[in-house]
Image 1 (cartoon, rainbow, N blue to C red):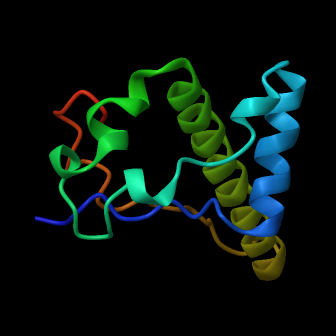
Image 2 (cartoon, rainbow, N blue to C red):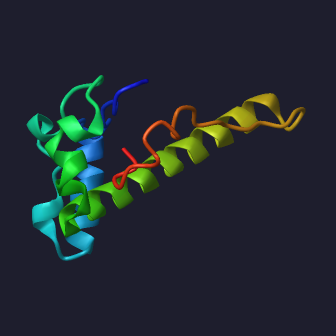
Image 3 (tube, helix red, strand yellow):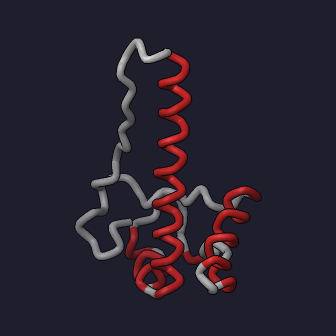
Length: 110
């Protein structure tokens, strides 16, 4: 069984995108990703973390997860568009997100 993994939301561009989304929602205080100490580590189970036991259901937690999900979908869209362009329409291109089912049955869907 795999752990909760790690958010890829701490780079300069990700932080800028999250802050912009938070400011657009009139919630600039939500413009930073969760504190890493609340997330455990890559192999942590959800019940071993503050974020996936309590913080995810706060308004700020839901905002972050909505932003993060949207950012991942946008990234996937961009990668697939580049792949389609590279093959020049000679083949179908698709993507798959593996492992999202591991923690789906818990409230946070970690």
